[in-house]
Amino acid sequence: MTAQAAAPRMHASPLGRLFWLRNFMLAGLLLLMLWSEWSIGVRLPWLAMGATLLLLAALNAFTALRLRQPAPARAPEILMHLLADLAGLTVLLLYTGGWANPFVSLLLLPVVMAALLLPAATAWLAGALSIGAYSLVAYVNVPLNIPPEKAFYLHVSGMWFTFAASVIVVVFMVLKLRTQIAERERELAAFREENLRNEQVVAVALTAAGAAHELGTPLNTLALLNESLLAGADDKNREDLALMRTQIERCRTLLHELSRSAQSAAGEAVAADTYLMRLAEEWRLLRPAVEVEAVWTDEKSAPSIQPPASLSQSLINLLNNAADAAPGTVRIEGRIADGGLQIDILDNGPGPAPALRAMAEPGRSSKGGLGLGLFLSNASIENLGGHVTLSERERGGACVSVWLPLRGLQAAPSRPAQPELNK
Image (cartoon, rainbow, N blue to C red; front, top):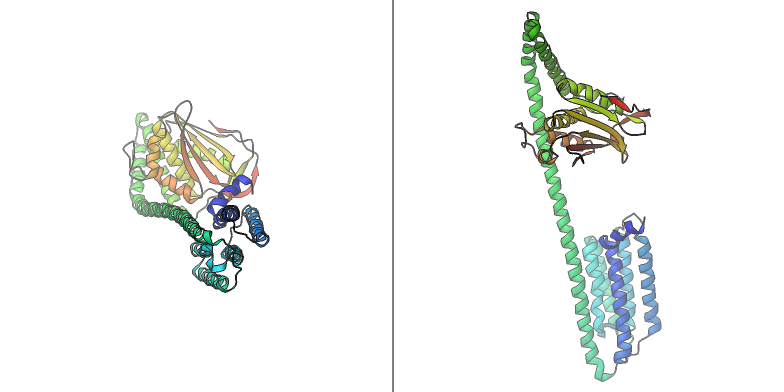
């Protein structure tokens, strides 16, 4: 792990918080020892206390190396660190007057950290050990040789320092907890929003399935009427009736694919460039007035994929939106990006702002429709592990980028790409 990647863990992880709190504790204790020796004249056992501080500093150096590892620290490891801090504080108190030392309340700090970072049973264990440490220094300690005229001043100063340290730790940890709670609430809100959107998608899918069943009969009736009219039509009307016949057959094909997609999630294996070419040809039948071209722009070979039926319908919805925004030419570009398949749909329309609103929620439409196409497309692509982004083109128009992970689409080894598929 790089230093840049490890830096956030030194602040955000439980072990990282212990690392920084131990740094502050060591610095504060060292300053207190120097102040007591030089300002008040207290003779301290520097050998024992210095060795204890060095051991805690070595532990913190090891902690800094541990934080560079990707694996998070578990409760037993955090408990060992807290017990090491408790042991270090106990040794320092043993050589500085025991429970008569005004800094004896520092034994509460490991208990507070254990209560915040560890499970209940482990926190109670840390509390019991802290009580045992306090009891130990009450009966086993080395009294300090303090000048009588400065004893009260030292005691009051120590109480002030202990109170200040407790305030800093409490405020620091409570603010961290508030931040964590706020993050959890944001995650929960996003989860609820996603569930709501999935429920909307399911509701629309159920409605579509019912509509597909009901539309079968009227489409068959229209096909029969079209055949009857086409048989007796003159040359002037024959072309329009033939186009009508094509669109009726297209509707019947879509209904058939809708029923089939409920039984099979993935389609046949096909190269990505060929898939885009077929998609363009299929969409041209729906929008004959719009010019469409599909191009594979990557130098790498086009991978073989198994696109589900929902992906094709999602891309057709996006193509329809592009054609509605700028009737004329729509361009489809495919390539490999970030280990996945990226499909860009480019138009010359006013930009992506209306489309963004339509993707956010159903029922919004800038062209008088139901506004479900983009919403369902975005939801379907996200269910496949991908995402949709919209951006403005430099020369005007919008670019809708669809990215999908290859692991969910790949079916077989790739073959050489066809640089330009269809114009």
